Image (cartoon, rainbow, N blue to C red; front, side, top):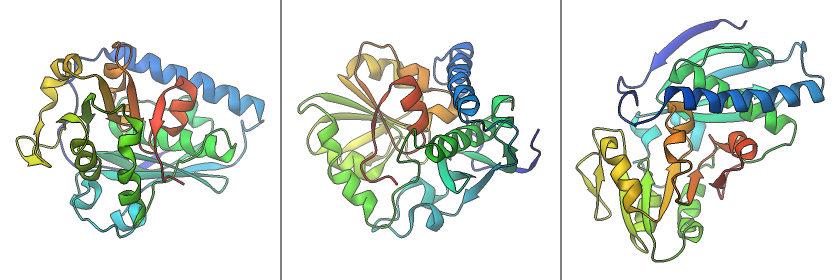
Length: 264
């Protein structure tokens, strides 16, 4: 089993007891991801190879370069980008906690997933392995001017005139969605809650259930996979789109709709 050398948290707040999620449902989802990963490992004879999944946290500049705006959560230090490398392929995952660790591909099948840092390593590793096998794409975040380009097209993923619930504060997405749709936004960052951005007041995660009932479409950050809240948004009778690189491999496995225009 790979040994974690260091684990760090960006902030102490977690999703525990905030989203009305069933922990067993969340773990069943990861079981499904592991079954799919195991099939790929077996089918491509990757088991036992001395190829390591190397997980590390990237700096904001390493992760997204130098975009025009400086209000993205990773630049503000509210989250980190965890990156895994497998056979020269890279996979990334946004998280609020991380570890510096090496894992073999077999370790991904057995490692505990009882913390955000562990789940971030697993998800980044899953993305890296799937990218190595060309099973999925867009596992590396866009950089520099690309986040602005991506946001400029985000409304194309939503039916015009719908009520949209934005899960996770992505400033450029909120700007563009608010200009064309009726939007509510929930976020876990206490520094954002109660503040208006683009005319939309950021609401706390405690209102998520009511906001899901209100909306026509859910537009949720893929990092809900890492914090364990992703099942909250499934099977609700509402279209849901997950955005960003974090959910790339999982979306392929679980047949989830995604938006990631400029990912690599």
